[in-house]
Length: 360
Ligand SMILES: C[S@@+](CC[C@H](N)C(=O)[O-])C[C@H]1O[C@@H](n2cnc3c(N)ncnc32)[C@H](O)[C@@H]1O
Image (cartoon, rainbow, N blue to C red):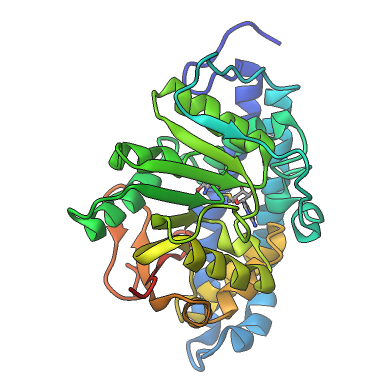
């Protein structure tokens, strides 16, 4: 291993070469393979376009590029974690100041649900919870999964901006981010609502430790709490805002229902729920690709979440006016009107925000 460090990631140059290779492969898959497969599909279905993703499936599966496309999606994801895990090694001690301005509430007695531990989510060996280094691996891997397009966490800021606009002048005294991971969704919320008590909740102790250390390093007083989002232990009627980014699709349906019930329990009457997730677009080819992404990326509950009427589920669980709006994650993007996305040739996630409130 050379001693030379790459400034942008802190990864030494030998490992950086592996990471660059995987990143190029993933970009090639997204910006060349996907449009090429799409072109084959358009040609094959010109005379009789499928109306549903079920109708589209047998056509797509017989296209010449399909096997390559599917292999590159799964294979490059596996290579990604190998490259990142090699670069991180045993990890580095996470340093926290002796007198932190925020807090870290770990719960060694918490039993992680089977549906959470049974799967190596995103194909990350051991998931995000097994060892201290898991958070470091996840942090670096997440940048590659987003193809380098979210290295400075742009879309988490765009999501926060959309929420801040909704809240206007309203006073926010408590805000809870459910499934906060290593904190990249929680830090911008604290920056946008500096006087609020901001609480990040997650099942994964390694992620919470990293979220805490990085919050402290940024001078952000955040309370990080190890708990299930379906049973946070927080006071009822106490939060003005409950958020979650990319959490819901990692949960099976009974847990999603319990998640909404818990959000409704901890929100103040009139409080807002804002979730950043994925939704079907109504385009059979694109929706099929997203369904299969769930399988190839070890996201076992993603297809189920997308096929469920989650807005109805939220309304049935004590919330009101639940509706989805499209979201564009690019720097010039943000919240869109209705459930309609701009046309884009490359593979990308169909981001959407679920908005709901607790009845007053
Ligand atoms: C894809 S990550 C997103 C993390 C963060 N919100 C972000 O945008 O970077 C999903 C997170 O949700 C957490 N999670 C999944 N199910 C959960 C549950 N029932 N309760 C708490 N956290 C959960 C996982 O541990 C993981 O950190």
